[in-house]
Length: 254
Image (cartoon, rainbow, N blue to C red; front, side, top):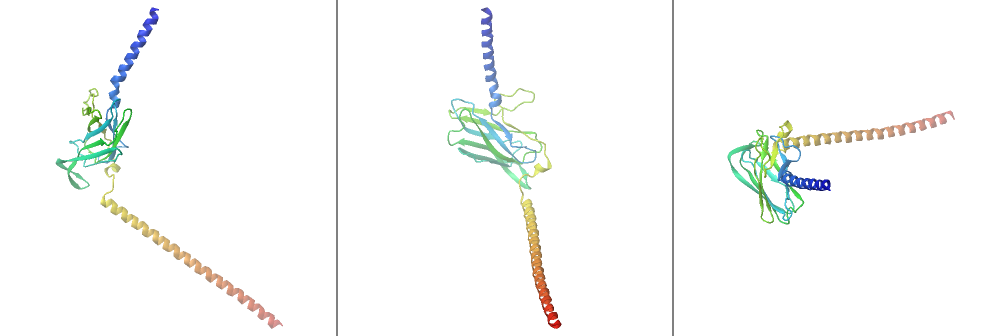
């Protein structure tokens, strides 16, 4: 009897412990995060997704504000349109202009705000907010984006805490984008005017070559046809000559 009671108490304690582990560990995988679609290489361009899970059972996420880094400003940041969401891009003047494709850029995107026009992100779901960004810095290994998540019940969660080296993950960590090593191909995503001109020139040369080949082909076909007709005429003349010669011989012999 005592053994059964002890076993029951152990099972109950294990269940409580398991529930506590789930509760304590849930923020580790349910926070707002950012990740690249493919590779986010230094000096290049990338499409990044801000992933926002809904952590509440009684409210939906209706707003997301993402602040862009000021220590490594991004000259280009273009969000993808999303049905059911209004998007506002905020730009700010830079203390020090940066260069992009040979041009001086004096302002950069400082914040992007997504506001739900409908129900937003309901309980049990998550939403991705894609943004094309670049050029990524060459002198950094990661970019920190601070995010603010607002719920339909007016609750606000600030994902703005920066991870310190050697420390445990903070309760509300800021989204961090890891940057990969730069490669030769990653420095020029997109087409510049010079590239477009070169491509247009190459296309024109290819078209001219194709036209010339087609012209040569047509000329060859015409020559072949003419020679064929001449051959037929010559052959017919030979046959006629043979027939006439045969008739003359027959008349002479007679």
